[in-house]
Image (cartoon, rainbow, N blue to C red):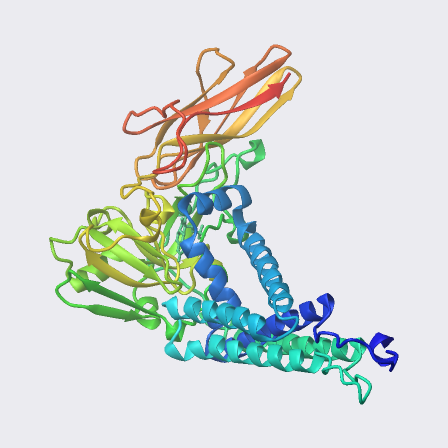
Length: 520
Ligand SMILES: Nc1nc2c(c(=O)[nH]1)N[C@H]1C(S)=C(S)[C@@H](COP(=O)(O)O)O[C@H]1N2
Ligand SMILES: [Mo]
């Protein structure tokens, strides 16, 4: 503060010119905030995903070891992106402080750190498949601006050389601080402006303009006992806001209908391409389908059911004429995620695979793939349910390897026959249990429960809506007082009874019996 100003003018040995620790950190932090703010502002014009912070976060997800991604998805669920955001911010702040600390005498060391970080941002944006070449403008200008701010603030803050003939006259600490804060505030305004600008062209406005989606072939009305919600089962149809969500996208891709296009290519007789209006103006079908994530643990909740509206995928594939040598349908999302489905299943006219544009009477919610996604009954989502899908390429297995297959998950991933206890309540010596069972594309035949090691007892099943959806079950059991374990198992319509062999979700889905403890 006043130390420099009031320095005695008596002769002193020359003090080395250097920044104090806090001021050096401030210079680094101001450069970091400038990089993020300027990058975000320009991303507002050239595409949200060009923002260096967003791109670096996505890069981290895409290059994390398999075990880390699985761990994050399992333990953090949908909060994993927030945790990553905070973690990345902490790492960047540490780098910014480091940049300051290695530059207390000359700006050189910090400039190198700033430029290296900037290059990481450029590389991360360069790697993206969902932004144009113009997008590089965001990280490049961000790098230039932060290198400039670092050099300029450093030069301003560094006290001038000690000179016997005149008192040293560097800026006060307060002056440096206010300049640093001024820069940060400006960068903050830039970041907010970038956010607002990218929002105005967002998918929400495009989605609102779609209007009602009416199916030409509506799903028959649900039977009144499609669920046992009053007895403790989940509702048959999951409201869109409760539908489970899994994706690798750090920010939800914003795709407008007029920008969207689906290309079918590779081992096909004719490459074809569909616009949103091409799809929308076809007669639409509506189907209830229960989707399940391969990461769902026994008893887990990564399973939901919706009425999907869209077109039959086979009709689109027939227009392209898929060649008999094709082994996989390799789907690509606008965010770079890829997904492979065995070609035989995608082409099976009895499967009911859809290109969906609607969900429960509305256009697809943005986070569930607006404008269009694939849904294929009976397969886990990671080998079927590509959101924001833009390309379907037919290929051999050896030609392409999709996102989760590269990370050790299985090529073939039919959903396993499973069941779950949702409610187990004891009232006056009577145990009421209710829950869910699923064996998509095969159908559930029976669900049984047992208390401790007692005999398996039948339950009442809900009316089957179709073989591609879950079924609810319930029953009342007599239990003696004390603590008990209740276990459930399902048998599907192929005659297979759910195995008690416990398996982890990796590589092709969890198995085992779900049980809960009750006190009677
Ligand atoms: N673009 C994209 N599509 C994706 C994924 C993804 O990470 N990115 N995840 C898949 C997985 S693993 C599942 S289980 C389903 C989940 O779909 P939902 O979020 O609509 O429930 O989407 C699939 N489609
Ligand atoms: Mo999944």
